[in-house]
Amino acid sequence: MTQARPVLQGLAPVLSPDTRLVVLGSFPGVASLRAQQYYGHPHNQFWKIMATLLAPEPAAVLALPYAARAQWLLHQGVGLWDVYAACEREGSLDANIQNAQPNDLQSLRTRCPALAAIAHNGGESFKHAKHTRLLGLPVYRLPSTSPANASWTFARKLDAWREVFQGVGVVR
Image (cartoon, rainbow, N blue to C red; front, top):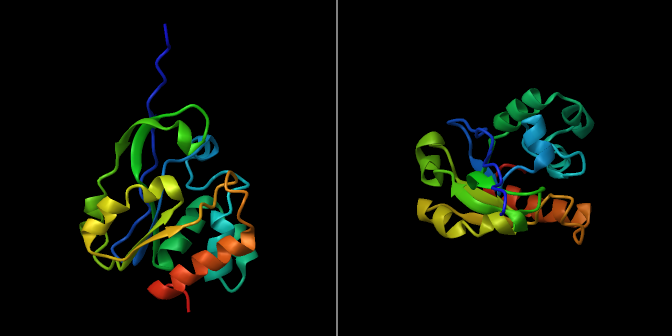
């Protein structure tokens, strides 16, 4: 008899009415769930990319505690959420996600009236682009910042993210 996997609950969104760009991941990995932080795995490059793109002194942002980093990101006009609210999954790989329950992505328009674009962090998240496109905003696919995406160098990921952030006007 197969033992049922527990249903994992995702993280609350990091959004504000001033959010201009929402970065949508798939679902937090084990380290992120344990820490209750978006992109909490020490080898995930998300926060390093954000600090490099948006801060005059990236090291200062990276040294901030998570809550302060999340507030800093909101002040940059960038919000965070995931496409899945809950799922069953062994480990952290997106390929292992089963019985996923989606977040209410359509609520982004009311939650974030200043929203100008949506960026999907990785392929699993981008599978939901058909839903986010219904919001009538530009939708982008970005290379995953996960350590599992080792085929892309940090510099290559940074360039791809910079192009989208500049196009949306979050980075000059």
